[in-house]
Image 1: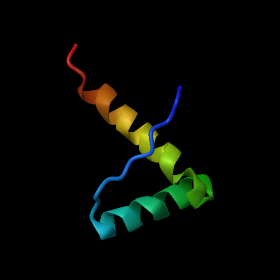
Image 2 (image 1 turned 90 degrees about the vertical axis):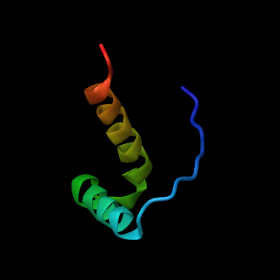
Image 3 (image 1 turned 180 degrees about the horizontal axis):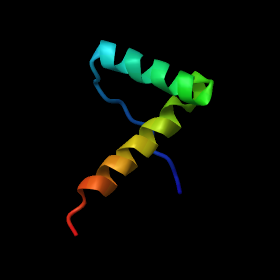
Length: 50
């Protein structure tokens, strides 16, 4: 699967909180992108019409 580089606007405090969450969970800020994608997928799966 190819990746698309994108830009989003997120509240500064929320992004800081998310980054800290990922660092605590994964041990590195390098995983922020992958964890963001995972969170989007989980959210979509939860709310899919079906």
